[in-house]
Image (cartoon, rainbow over all chains, first blue to last red; front, side):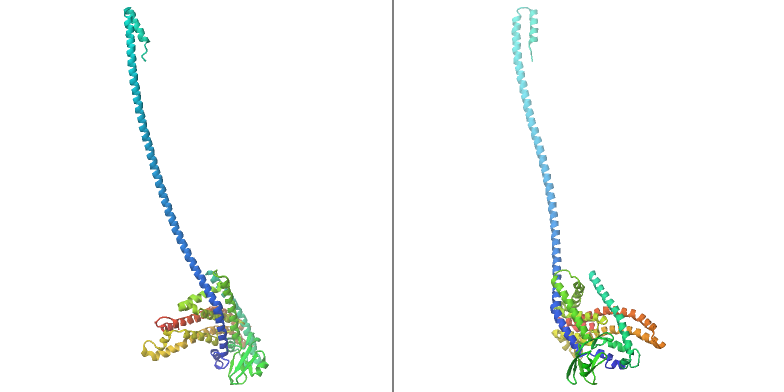
Length: 174
Length: 372
């Protein structure tokens, strides 16, 4: 107990010494001023600046990502539209081609039938002409024969008969 | 983040290694001391009962201040002494090694302190003592560390932290976000320089105190914690707003004012006092525990030696077997305490300042009571 209360004892531990207090005040305040002004302020400012720039970078990255996503979606829809357009065009072209084909066929058939009709009419005409020609010729031949027969009749029957036959033979009726 | 934790771990491991060497060196130191304690010229002064080992005296000598820097027992670095004698009004300066000058000025060395030879003289010791040297070492280290880091922040603007910068950045951010911003909100930036200085000053001194030989018990000295607590106290009361003073001088139910006003006025004093005592007591206790455990070696050795009426290596070995593991264990805890106490002091400073400057009409004192 004596050592605890004596001057060099434990009681001295809880009595602040003016000298040390003064020195620690001086040292601490100088440290506070120097570090606060020249170290901690720039450090906290730099930290804040870096954090801000990181935040901005993250935000702009997010924005770019969204932009990309919307662009991709836009591209996708454009692509789909183009596909639809293509299909439509192809279908239209097919339809048009089909129409052209049927038109051509129809036209060709029509033309062909016109030509056939014309040909048939021509044939008919020719046939009629030929028949008329034949009639004329047959008439002429018959008149000729008849003339010759009449001329020959005067000579005898048998001979006449032979003559007619010969005439008929020689006459080509085509 | 994992990287930071790894680096912190490395730092702690390094300090741990230092503290274990600390134990070995302290043992040596204490051993040297015991030998001298038994020497006849010191016997009358330090061990009056003749050869009996006095752990109290050894511990007090180690946790207290000194007018010279003791490396090992008997190897002292002399320090300048500045003594002001109030009684005679004289100022004397001399080196602690210069005994002639000391005695000529009327002083002598007593328990490592310079004391007036004449009894009953009032003296103020403004010497550069061991603790002042400790403070200067801590201040120098802090200046070197933080100017290095500041340069890293300025030259490598906007880039990821590197080296020392990345080691301390999580702690800086911790102080800013979890200490300052938590209690001060928008006002955090204004108080950041103070809070950062207080935090790193206390932490650095706590850590240096764990290192043997070089370390001194700075934050375990009430004069140092008194100064720190007073600065926080001044900031609280200077920066306090109307609401704070209104709460103290015009308490809510006015009929209770005769009781509440003294209590509230007392709280102006109790805030710094709690800060002062908490830091001082925690750090001092850590030092005393380590020294007490080391004393066990000599107590055991002495007890066994007395029984056999000779020196006993067996007793010393038994003491060491108990003391060394416990000292290592306590030293590791002290590493944690060093950080935690720095954090608590800073945290409470921020909380008190935050409550005194808070811009609303609630009852900040109710919250304050919860924090004591």
